[in-house]
Length: 323
Picture 1: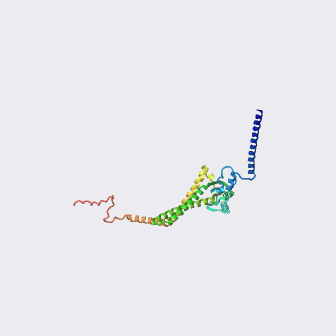
Picture 2: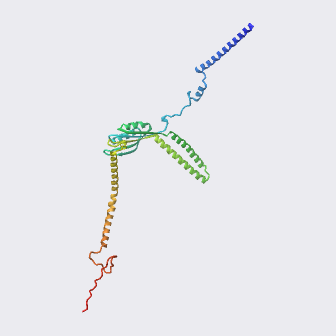
């Protein structure tokens, strides 16, 4: 019995030792494979896929859409109001600033007056020079107001590109069908359809050019006012003096319009009105003279008395008594 127990213990110890040896070999093999992979051996599945795609391995989700500003279509619009000492000199400097930036003048309205000079310029400058030109214009004098608006038209531009591509394909299809027309009726129908599709394509292309112009050239409206001119904030105030000043300006403007109308009418009055008035006065006076009877003259014989006039009775002869 003792020998059997000893044999069983020996066999169990041997089996346990064999299991420990197998476990050690397995862990060593896994460590060797990991070391081989890190040391530059065969790449793992993720690296193999990235190498096959020609891109480096990145964690997380896929690559996001490019949202950089230079890849988007943005329309910039700005307006400035600047008070300057010399409106004409500041207007020349503003035009020069736009020209140096590669732009041009889109509109120019000026009111030259000794105490109330104003110049309103509409400048078109490249989009990448928009903010530098705005800052340069603000330094021409004392900035009173600034407003900058932006409009992202990227989606509209992409939609227009897709619609233009589709419409061009439709035009090409209509042209192929027109070349294969075999009857006069089909020819007329296809020509009308082709003309309609070409008109739609031209409209889409015009919209695309308009968007391209707005995105390529930004618009800056700068208002240059003299030192004595009232600003927009002052015009928005209330009070007796403000109302009196506004009423006086309206009165002067109304009188200007009235005198302008009178000046336009006066030549017509002198050329046609005066002769017609003299003729009418002469004709009326002549008619009155012809209708008035001569004073103290007896009416001609046989002339009937005027209606309602009392006719004088003939004198009755006196009765004579018989002798």
